Image 1 (cartoon, one colour):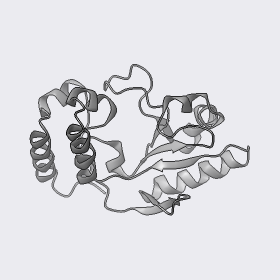
Image 2: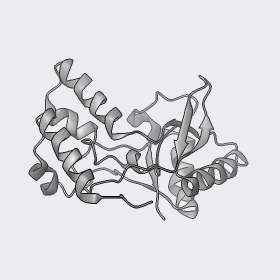
Image 3: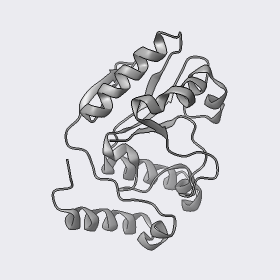
Length: 179
C-alpha cells in the first residue's frame, strides 16, 4: 500500500530525525531510501515466547513457504524480528543514545527512523538454533547456507552484505522480500 501522503510522511520522518540529531542530508549521501510504513500486516509467525511477528501478506506467505521448504531439508528458520514501526525505531535509537552509544556507531547498526526495511513489513531478521540472535555468527549456520542457496526462489534477498553501499555493518540475518 503506497504512502497516503508522501510529503506528510517525509516531513514527519525529517522532524523525528532532527529530534534525534540525525541529518537528513547525510542519509542521502549513504543512498538510504525512505521506506513506507506498512498498514496491511498479518501475523507471519509466533515465536517461542508468544511474540507475534507481523509482515505484509505477500511477504508472510513467502516466509511461510520458505520456512516449510527449509524445514523439509532439516533447516530451522525462525523470525527474530519483522515489522517495526517508525516510532519503535525512534525508541531503539533513543535508548542507544541514552546508553551513551555515539550516533555514528548507532547508524552503522540501526537504520534511522523512516529508513528501515522493517517499516515496509517485508524484512525479517532470521535466527536458528545454536547461534546468538542478530550476531554475525549466523553466517556459519546451515540456515544461512540454505538461505544463500534458496531464499531468492521465495523472493527474499540479503539486504546488507559485507561492504554494502548503505554503510551498514554486515547483517547475514537480515533478509527482505522483494515484490
